[in-house]
Length: 591
Image (cartoon, rainbow, N blue to C red; front, side):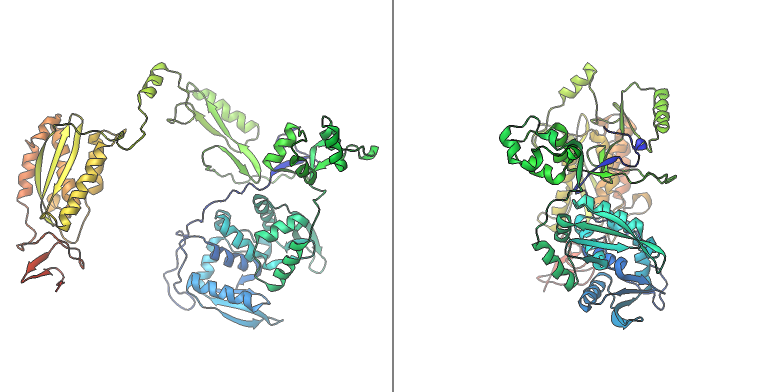
């Protein structure tokens, strides 16, 4: 029987999905800003662009065995090889060099890094507070699988390995709970126990993985310490039976074989024979379910088949506590509104019809509040195109069918008619006189040709490429009209500047792209002013006046340039003199 969360009581079981393998991508660290004051320990360090496995391992090692005292980072470990690796990571990640010396009452080896900026970076990542306040940093929780594994490997410098289990004991209850959720995501089941330290009169929290789960954890992590690697190999060589504590409180073991053939019942003797009366209701374990699911002749019930396929495990509710008001976050999930939160599958979208009224929406949100929902996602049919949309209107269906499926690039490009009308406008630019030809059809600008410099020159090739790309953009089928696309192209190209410019004020042209944008701008303004695209074809009225103003603009230089670009400064002031090409802007010579 399934229950709502607010109906759970101690003793009930909660179904959790183990091994969901849901991970993010390494987050950017661009939000970190170093102090501009440079004195003492305050020096600029190099900061990784994003979280990465090496940085995650350093952060995990710091949380396990590190601290910050007066702008100094200290990480302590008894093995010099561990500290040498962390010292090398410090150099590669931050450009800093630390020192390894015996320190403290026991003369333990300590890596010491003096840097205020590094301390500030660790605090920015979420590494702050006392031992009881430590948590997994936000940048690690949102990171990739590789970075999460590296972080855990560093954190388990504070862990231990015995003959049967792998554990870690910490003062922070929240960090232990976070680790359990993270391991659930990896597919490793762990158990939390509380231990009281009489000497300090405080509780410590231990997270353990036993038997086969311990072996899964050992295959996941990499241990830096030699003695832990040796113990890990011994545990991995052992054979463990499945856990009897991982029970499935759905059906008794005996009921699984109610309809099974006799031969199947005998093959799984331990799971089918008559049990003593006090054990008849003994429940199936996951170890037993794994054996049964791998036998095609065992008729699993639908509920057991779902538990097996979805990897659902059950944990008993120990206590239900009122945590008071807690922050609520908006989540973005890919492709679907169903997601896994702390291992629990969630779905929080309300799909409403198109004619939903404001009063009905108000009633929906009030009902969600009264039922104790923390949040609800509302979607009204038709509010977003092609998202859960029902086509009920015949006209809408006909319009949808009229859109031809594009199966190749040629089907998505408007074909050029045999005859198009247009004109050529000459615009002065730093590269020389630019001839921009604009041809139009009945829907607006259709193609653009850009010509500047001599044929075969570098600048001529660039101008031809610019014209081809603009023409392709105008001819590709799009929800935007050709005029709208021409305006967007103009906005993108207008104002692009180079090393020089010609003209003054509004007539200033800063580069070849800026000149093309200016020609398109005049064309569109003329068409909008007259309300007739045909007027713009002949370049009359306002277009002519603009052209006359542009023609009076100052020329770039009295030099007779070849149209080729200088490989050193990028200017088109390469001239051919005395059998050699020279640049009059920077003095470069090919001879």
